[in-house]
Image (cartoon, rainbow, N blue to C red; front, top):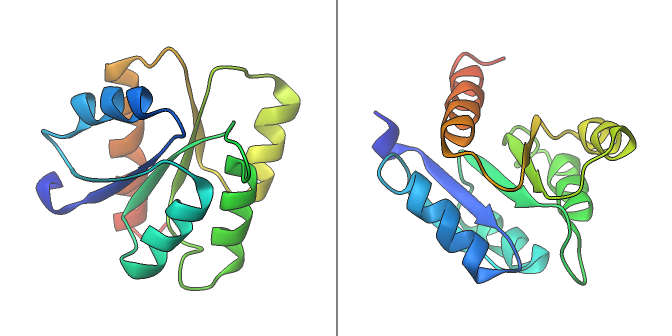
Length: 128
């Protein structure tokens, strides 16, 4: 069932995308983008079922990407999970207020990542 679900991985570090792909590719179709602008282009062409989005990126950070996606009626419902190595309660509050569903903390725990993605895709399927 998950084979049909598509994830967009967004991170300015190709090594981080490779790490995420290694964890996720057996369960999901994977698209990747190495910048916020590229992520928005990928989503405009073919919206994914869920986005795993790095917070800290040059030019356009994850918060700006999230804000643009949530402001667009065609992409607003796509679940967004932020990935970050630096976390504090103000940052979490900011991301959640912008519409992110959850945070994944680096270093990535593969089991937590898979469980979190599955949970948010299930929510989406239920229309919640």
